[in-house]
Image (tube, rainbow, N blue to C red):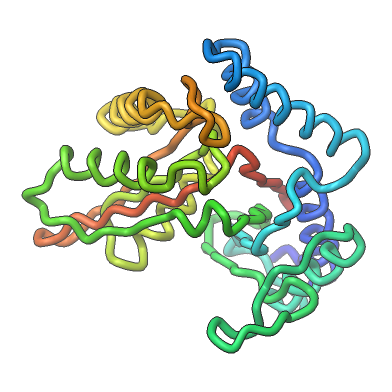
Length: 279
């Protein structure tokens, strides 16, 4: 049995959230660069160029890429042969607390959804934990801004709606979002499971590098088709028009009830931030 201390977890989470807010993942930055090089609309190309310059400045000056430094989402894969000495969830929250303080990151969490008020330290973290084989802990920090989160949608389709219903729902979601989520967007799409699980799938899908396709050829082809169709909508960078509405998307699925076809789209902007470490 391998031991990992709460202090190690806190330090890792602190470091991850600071890093994620200052430096975009390589695959997302490369997708933005590729989009700029291939963009045919001059205004859209100029907008993408400005977004690239913003990323470079954020990295060089060590300041946040976006002023919305997000809700602190954490995905944890905990090995079954790990013994955590201390309170796991409190260790994560303490890491968020320290990271958002030391990193001068905006604290955006309302203490109550209706009565509001600010928790003052961006806690609590929104934690998803899975037990996995092995003696390691894998932590992914995923700061999620709300401008794009607000554009996300979930639908309980009928099985008869089939694949065409799924495609229509995804396209309608992007079309209705328009410029609001600061396109070019990145989409996580969940299909199947239950009401709660399909939302989880959509968020989990955003963790997959943009260079990786679904391992099932059927869903890989659907990813490619949706990507092409979304970019044909012409919304473009920041809603100014052009060829680049979407930088990438990923589909994750689960078996579902014979009477159901749940679908969720978690919308993310080009600042899709994530950082991972293994303890």
